[in-house]
Image (cartoon, rainbow, N blue to C red; front, side, top):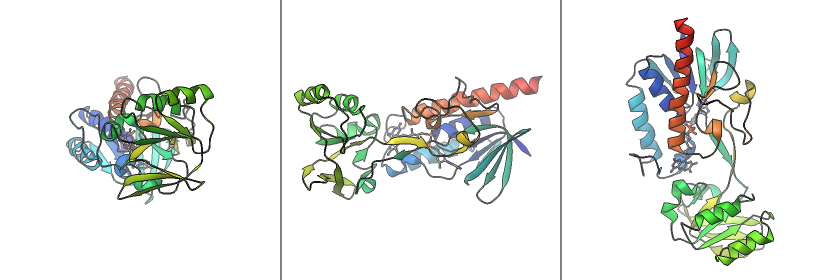
Length: 300
Ligand SMILES: Cc1cc2nc3c(=O)[nH]c(=O)nc-3n(C[C@H](O)[C@H](O)[C@H](O)COP(=O)(O)OP(=O)(O)OC[C@H]3O[C@@H](n4cnc5c(N)ncnc54)[C@H](O)[C@@H]3O)c2cc1C
């Protein structure tokens, strides 16, 4: 059997693509190894009708809806190899099972690379986050730290000033702000600390202090840490897809990559803004691109 379309990744992008293709009566192999990036957090925000839902509940409802369509198969496994074949694409999973499909959507998302700071991981998704739109409201008016080694921290600090006036910027040993920018931040009461950070100190997910390499520390109740985003799966690169400047898989407005028959949707394509509703919309749009291309081929 050859599926009309395989989708690697069952996050909001892959799930919404599967929903649209299932409703379009296409046979779909939806692969997912069940490692959602946002699983560390207690609640997802900003998705209308789903604001405040847990990531697990979001996925439960989504799978329930998608699997109502009998032409969608949910393959709960990890894809390890993808090859281009004459009829489309061949996927091999971690048990060696081979699946073929005419079209393939990569919806594998991204992963974060954080500065190596002790104590970060137990607090991430609980009182330390990376996205103000996702969790800024929950941290409003609290004493916050913004940790970033990049020059974009100036913009982040300006934006976060609307969520809390009690901000401290830490560059973790980097000199990423100009004197003029530091002066402007200071004029709003935002200190910039350029010393390397040794550790985040906290308990039960709650940040209490930021400790610096020189032994000093400051009390903080939460904050935002800027990661570097990279692809979570190697398939786009291995298949030779063109990339965007940020490192996303380059697509047209219907999700087509530079490789014929290969599509990409969600965080994997655009990296930013990393949002559930953008990913779901992108999955929907890409599924329509796939269906359009299948229709053109089949109608001929
Ligand atoms: C801590 C945190 C909090 C967040 N909070 C919010 C929020 O409040 N609101 C919001 O809008 N956004 C939030 N986000 C961002 C949001 O989670 C992402 O933008 C969204 O999940 C991207 O969807 P996606 O489908 O592109 O990728 P993902 O959701 O990352 O899904 C990718 C899927 O692909 C699967 N996969 C990867 N490789 C393989 C493989 N080889 N084989 C099989 N399956 C594979 C993974 O298991 C995963 O299920 C948050 C993110 C984090 C990290």
